[in-house]
Amino acid sequence: MPCLPLLLALTLLGPPDKLADARAQIDAGQAHAAANTLASMLKDKEGDEHAVRMLLAEAQIADGAPDRALLTLEPLANNTDAPALRLMARAFRANGDRLAAQGARHSDDAASMYEQAADYLGRAAAAGDASAASEAGFIELYQLGDAPAARARAEALLAKDPASGEGLLLRGCALVNAAWTADKAGDAAAAKDLHDKAVADLLAADTALGGKRPEPVFQLAWLYEQSGDAGKAVQAAADWCDRLPQKDASRLYQLARRYVGERRWGPASNALLAITKRDPALLTNLVKAESDPTKVAVSLSWAIQPLMDAQRGRDARDILAALCAAGPQDADLWNNYGLVARDTQAFEESWRAYEQALALRPDDANLLNDGAVLLHYYLHRDYDKAQAMYEKAIEVSTTLLATPDKLSPEQKAAAEKAKKEATDNLANLAKGVKEWKG
Image (tube, rainbow, N blue to C red; front, side, top):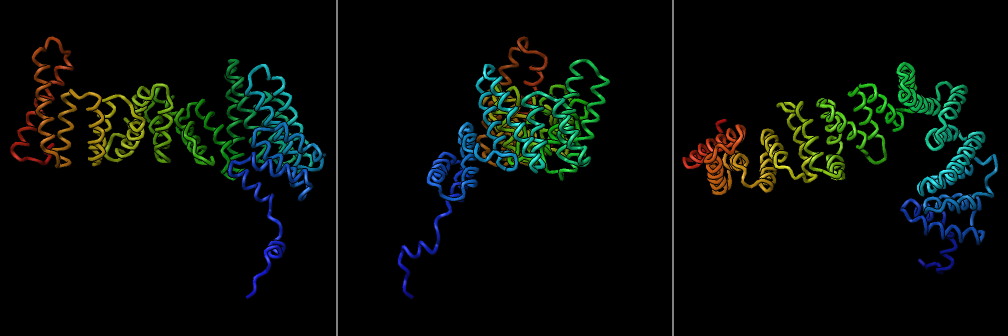
């Protein structure tokens, strides 16, 4: 079959889809390159001008140049082009965010940008963009701090459609703000009434929006936390984590920290377990980010108390594993992890925990004995190492007990226990007894 000349073949295939390529670049985080391509297309009057301007503005916003996006969109910003109006609002908001990040001296300029964003969203709503009005309300609520304006916008949406999920969500969030304000003012009765109304609106919004949006459950988690309903707070925080594009366990973690501080071990363990069930690394990374990971890991480890039974021991082990993966420098925490791992039949995991504990406290007679027990009775290996550990445990405890007046009652009891157990275990090892008798 004869081949077509290259130029003719390219003509038949048509020109490359530069818009599609630019979109792919934006999605791949290459907004600057996409903006250059699209700017050249606009200059050369290549392609549909409206489509090129819209995508160029999006690239400019993604590239951190929202001021350029405003200039790009200006010819399109009439009161009938809802997508262009919404994109103008997005550019104004990005400008506001940029100015707000520069500090308080730019706050007035940032507020002006947010006001413009809300105004353009209002125009987009009038042009048929159903969700633009609620977005404007959220800017009024969170960026401009005008809760009454946000609530009024929500009431207008609900007057048109009492079942509007967006309207219910906006009003619920405005009510959360009002409840917080009333509580700070010391008006407990008003705060309670507003709290209950906010919960009702947010639950209704969640249903109306299909139970998929993260915003309602984020607010509900805060409301339930404030009212002391820990179980619902943890569940709402878990739902929020699941509904995000990338799981974020920070809300669950905050709840766990709070409930541990209040010695409420049940909800604290539920919050930690909700994290580890989703991804243990989420908990590990949050602990690592603390200024004192060891202190936090030890504190959180107290939450496993309700899980210390045959039914839930593995859950306790999973939490301790995630905490210890943060590298805490606390031998007792590693020892507890080793004990729980041993009791849940994870013997190799237990030995690794004992190794870490002994690296931190190599002359602890009880750690030496317990680690040797694991090798001797459970793993059935490295008997020479186990023997050496028993012998060192006996030596260390004997030395301590030689000066009993220098020991507290607890230290004396611990040394006596380690010496007796290590002595008995060493005798068993010499006799060839290698099964744990309890």
